[in-house]
Every structure is written in C-alpha cells, then in structure tokens.
Image (tube, rainbow, N blue to C red; front, side, top):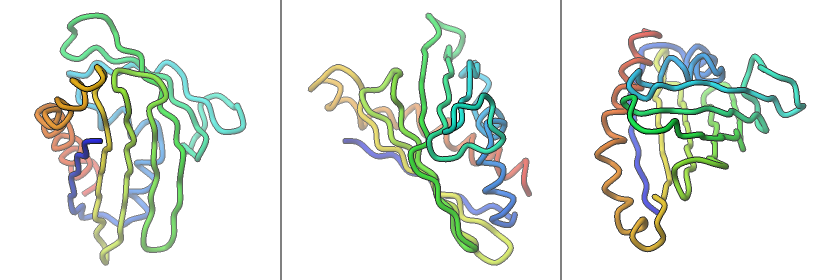
Length: 159
C-alpha cells in the first residue's frame, strides 16, 4: 500500500490544535474549496446526530465534486481510534466507502512547548486492482497541494 505524509509545526498549543481537529467544522475549514465538500451527515458512536466532538466510532457521510467536474463522489469516513494525553494526541479515520480502494488517515499531534507538531499520514490504494496498486504512488501529485493547503490553513487559523 502507498503512503503519503506531511508534517508541520504550528505556533499554537496542543489543546487548541487538538480541539480544532476534533470537530467536523475543522474538517470543513481544512478541505480546499476546489473539492466542493458537502457534509451530508455526522453520527456519533452512540447514534446521536451531529456530535460536538468526533469520538472513536463517529461516522461522517460526505460528498465531493473536485473542481466541479463529474458527478459528486460519496465518501464515508469512520473515526476508528482517538487518544489524547497531556503531550500528544492521535486519531485515525478510515474510508468505509468512497473513491479509493483503501484509505487510512492517521492524524498525530505532539506538543513542543507552546507549539504543536502536526503530522498527517495516509495509507491508501487506488481502485483498479493491480493497475491501481501500480499507479497509487502517483497520487502524491494530488495529495501534496491538498495537504500543503490543509497545513497552511491550520497555521493561518490557529497561530
């Protein structure tokens, strides 16, 4: 499986960075406009609609239409892990339905004094069997500008 990662230092405390990334509003703020994201529904682990915090077991139904071209792509993301301590925090979401054969996104946050190191790692596989596996490393062409923008937006909103 192919892997993409990006790491950034944010001049904001871990508690603020973690809180921002723990809410669906953070996802909306960080998704580039050209993706045309629409949150269809959010369900918490207990079945409640629109939970304040995305706890493990939360499910996000969304759709995207990159650059406004083609039909909207449906995507279901489930928070499968969420842990936090005084100096570090992590959550992992997995795509349960969407355009990739596989998508596992690990979000790591590490306190460094009054700053936070934000580390995104995505393990993914494009659809299409052997051809998708062969072409998967080339997806970095799309991931790099998207994650560079996400990290730039995190800094702009929280610093």
